[in-house]
Image 1 (cartoon, rainbow, N blue to C red):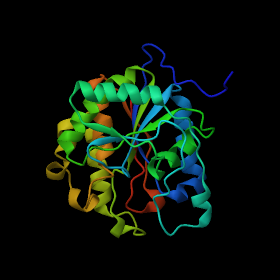
Image 2: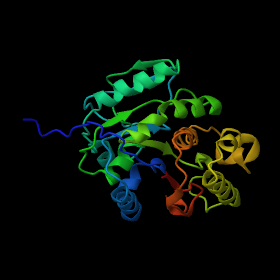
Image 3: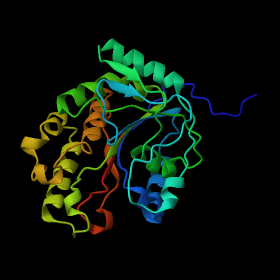
Image 4: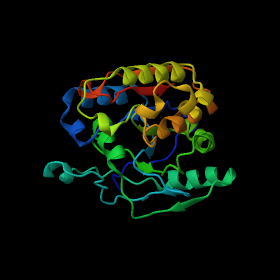
Length: 267
């Protein structure tokens, strides 16, 4: 008999929906932040499987990654060698992939399979903290472009999963300007972070979709917005499934720089 974990979905198992700040490879050496992610995972119900949407995979049409364990994607450069030796052999999630295909088909959303693609660092780094035994089946799904309205529709299509034992995870950063790396936390980052917190607390998806026009310092906080995009998907899933409680399990700024660590749970 196999000892591999099952991804059988318990009936009517309601899961929270999350967005998390995933850091960079050095997060693995940040004991405090890793501890916060681990404690957060322990407070949540254990998922039957995880659907991961990372800022580091955008592809149109939407693509489903490997449904079996394949090598990780080390999509970062210039770091010490030990980070490229990291392993996270999570089980694949073929049943979840089949369900995702059905949900996307029901909304006429195009998709393809990419069976050789492993988890990227936006996926495996936070998962190493949250489920360090790599014993929860994981499926990564690409962002279908960066158009905010399209991302909201994408989230609504995936929303039933949150009632089927699946932890839907958006992984990115709510502020992300690499030109500010190493600078003390600037006022624009504080203002944008506060606006996002208020908007998420109100579950105001329309404001998130229109963040370029409505949020203070949006162009500085996100010169490009691939790291913001997963928050739109997660929020759309949560609103569609009636998740009314919003909490921020991780807050503050990474190394007192401009990158907010704010992470969100919709329960």
